[in-house]
Amino acid sequence: MSCDFDKVIDRKNTNSIKWDFAAERGMPEGLISMWVADMDFTAPREVLDDIHRAVEHGIFGYSEVKQDYYDVLAEWFENHYGLKFGRQDVIKTPGVVFGLAACVRALTKPQDAVIIQTPVYYPFYNIIQDNNRKLVTNPLKYENGKYSIDFDDFEKKVKENSVKLFILCSPHNPVSRVWSKDELEHINKICVKYGVIIVSDEIHCDFVYAPYEHTSCGLINVDAIIATSPSKTFNLAGLQAANFIVRNVKYRQLIREEISRTGYSQLNTLGLVACQSAYTHGKKWLERLKEYLTGNIGITRKFISERLPRIHLVEPQGTYLLWLDFSAYGFSQEKLDRLIVQEAGLWLDTGTMFGKEGEGFQRINIACPRTTLETALERLEMVFGRIN
Ligand SMILES: Cc1ncc(COP(=O)(O)O)c(C=O)c1O
Image (cartoon, rainbow, N blue to C red; front, top):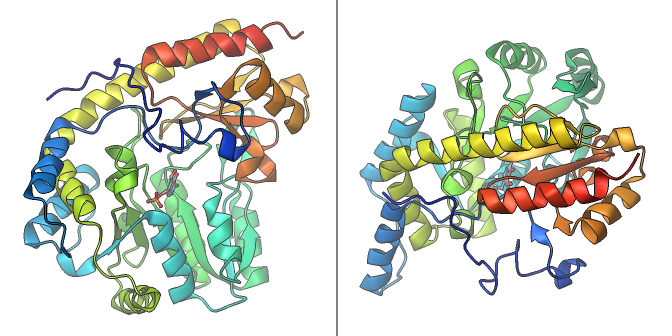
């Protein structure tokens, strides 16, 4: 198994949205790119070998998967998280966002209210509003540099708006919280009380750092829909394969019907190959990757506390996306963005992309070789270390 995470791989001229589309996205050339959530590492060797074998076969006709695909998927989630499901419960989709949007359309009606916890992964807003549903937000509480759920506000908003569906982000992007069992039980209790369907986006579940542990919402509520994908875990986003676990028969039928209405049937052949291969062979590689990311987080934490103490790193519990609070500088978001892009030469995700609660923040993707991260941190120091 090769996993040289220190190796800097030139991703330019590969049509990578992270590295090749600065001009198209209104950014200057030459930035260090640490925005969108993919990693600058190659996928596990075994996955590449399986994809190569499929490519060498040379025929890319319509493809499906057999029982062994479902077996490795079920094994992964049962072994890691104790989540149990069978083949019949799995709905394959070309992505998590595609599947979340299908859930919104299948399980709610136009004008129905859907609740999310902000700041949050920005496509959540789009799939609600673009499908003519009412967006209801339950802002996370931010106190003493830490995030928590405002349960009273959640219940009040659910009740006032007759909310039908809750899209949970677990672990949470961008605030990198790993929700505890107690928190999930509490929120679930409110959802059950008011008949709110839970769709839990658990795409980041494989990136949780000790002592935190991922609790799948599927352990708390058998009717919760669990969105999973190998795309973050094994860096396969461009291969377009995700798996939704839907154990409620009625919901499953409605979602299948909705997907059928979109005209989508079989997934990308190579995506299916990669997904099965990753869940079969990827465990050791993932362990090494998590050690590497833990190292990157440690370096960032130390650098910021020693050399950039006015920036607050919200303590990362999960994901490889760190949430940096620059509010102590008192800059407008526009000025903050300008300093990051024009002066520091970094392409991060500006906080307000995740909602107005992201004002004063930037999200940085640390899934890159350590030398890249160190250069980025030094660039931050060059700009922000000088400001009194
Ligand atoms: C919480 C969350 N959900 C979904 C996605 C994207 O999933 P997909 O590419 O499978 O649509 C991301 C990517 O960053 C994410 O952070």
